[in-house]
Structures are given as structure tokens and as C-alpha cells.
Amino acid sequence: MAFIEADRVKVRKYLCFPNLYVQADPRLESAITTVQSIADGGTRPTSDAENDIKSTLTKLATIETQLEALWAPALATRADDVSLDVARGQSILYRDGRRLINALSASLNTRPCRDYFSAAPLSEGFHPGVASPIAGYEA
Image (tube, rainbow, N blue to C red; front, side):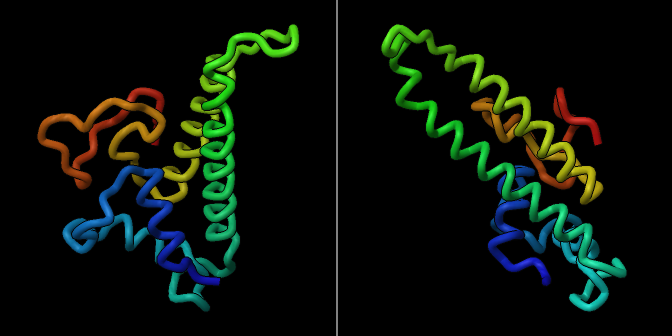
């Protein structure tokens, strides 16, 4: 089954490509279409690559849900004589999210425009078509 717009929005979100003016740099959009099966307008004989990307998107959404679940415990350090190490849990989830984004970017032969799991702002002169390598991401 072909990527729907919601799938494309998620790919752009995790790779930190803008949703505005996607026609200005169509490489990512073209890559998304290309990995679809021939029956869906792509170039692959089956939908395996597309299904793999959709699976990765689901896993990334799960990580986001798990991170949000840590917000409340982050305010507590102990609960019923159990020590909580929320920072360690967050760190593991961030690392796994970065690993999945690396897999997503490799599947689409691109690089993320910035680190999705970081609060760091965009750098000066940011342009999605000439994204510089980000530490921790290897295409």
C-alpha cells in the first residue's frame, strides 16, 4: 500500500525536513515515492522497503510515547522505596530514536537535517538540501 500523506509528514518530521515548500527540494519526496512498489508508482518489485519504513515510523512514535510517559516520573526521584533513574531511561530512548532515524535516513539515502531528539536550534544558514552531517548520524 502506497505511502499516504500522513506517512510522508512523519518521515519529514523525524528527518527534520520542513513541511513547507517541499517542492523546493523534491529529493526526499522523490525518495519516498521511489521506495514504493511498482504497483504503487515506485521502483521496487515488492512493498518490503515501504513496510520497513512504516515499521520504523511506528517504532519512533512508540519512543515518543515512552518519552512522554517519563515526564511525570522525572519530577520524582523515589516512589515507594524504589529509586528512579529517569535520565538514564530518557538517554536510552534518545539513543534508540537516533538509531532508528539513522536507519530511516539510510533507507531513503539522505541525512537528517538536524537531531530530532535534541533541543538544539537550527544552525545559521540552514537549508534542507545541503544538510551537514550531524554527530551520531552516519548515512
